Length: 338
Image (cartoon, rainbow, N blue to C red; front, side, top):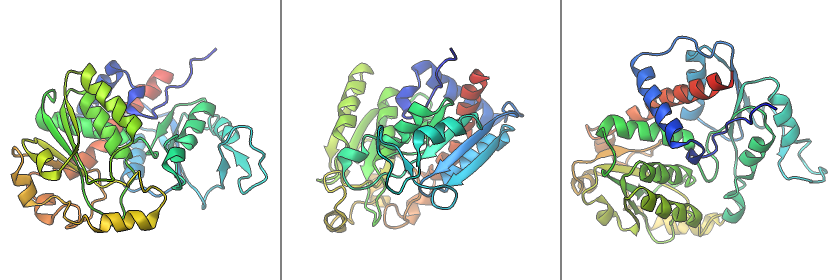
């Protein structure tokens, strides 16, 4: 029997040793790119919603390693797919994920999936049913390119950027700060960054307005990670309190889980929070902090031009590091499969 494929649905799918290997190889590849270790590999990329950095960086990573990509976009390249087990398929979806995954696994060496949450209830979307269905039925590694709950590829780049910037990250102070946006993202980036930082021994403060707490299950795990790694996590702080003494400010807008699915109520709540943004006054409260943001970033709404274009900004370096960490991940996982 062949060994089961090694999926990356969340960062916890990588052991401490494997995570260290990915980050170490990322540095070597950034300094001196590998030639063509994946010259015989093909990665299938399925997008159920849009992408800019994830699609471009992952495709470039595969090609720079000598591999090939097949990009498929929902609605233009394929049809609705059913992911419920035992369903009577008399609705819109003409095919089940189990069949699509089984067939695509015979064509490619890995599958990268960006699912599209339904956006009706958080209790439903937090199950990440789409990406979990792909991981159950694919016989090749499945990489999560951002589900409702997790974005492990972004977290890898974030960890690498933190190490590049701070050196030893254990004991360093990170403020994860909610910022206002007219179209907030899912909490996936914030969830993955929170766990990654605590797993690395960083002291983390999370700031957000009332009604914008992160997923409680994720927070329970965060508290456990803080205990395991002998560090601290402070939750539900005000903006100014979280910034005090911070060495890294990670700005991110995310949806209200309490108002999830109620666009009118959430928009009304967000509309009163335009002062939650990062500018010069906010950064002056920190211990000379550097700024991180996963992008896209709304200039002068989430973060001011002065900060984004100034010397404290890491956002472009952070985005570039998506390329290097994804190359390392692909090289390690696909070469082990060969």
